Image (cartoon, rainbow, N blue to C red; front, side, top):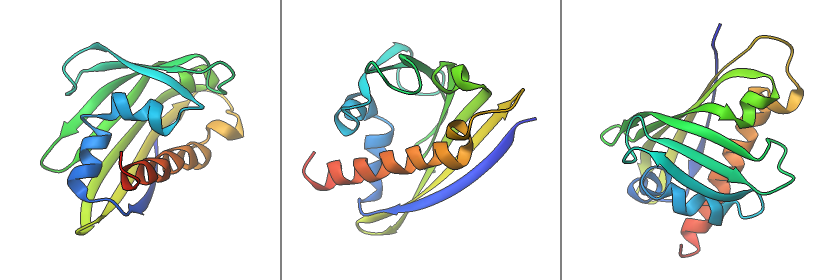
Length: 155
């Protein structure tokens, strides 16, 4: 049974700038924001919208393995929402049978955006502490903080 975990954070970046970084430009930005973790991100199939398949290649020694394949399952420019489902590697190699992250952005000021994060997950047996949503959400929030810093400091 798929479970859901939610969290949120405020980012000191305008809505449209953050949306572009999380949706249109993220294949170029992720390796710059996480240079010690992500080697590169490749588009395997699609145009960046729903159904697009991506491969995140990790540097050797990454705890999640050498790569993670993800599919964009939601992409709504009007509501500023994007969903990414892991389809191979990464968290699925660590005991999870399903893992999807949704980001929904909303402006709370000219240069501030609220990011609502929902993690949907399932597992068939006991999972290690590091892949429980309380821990994986920390990685997501860490990425958003690093992204915020990257964008503020003149990306």
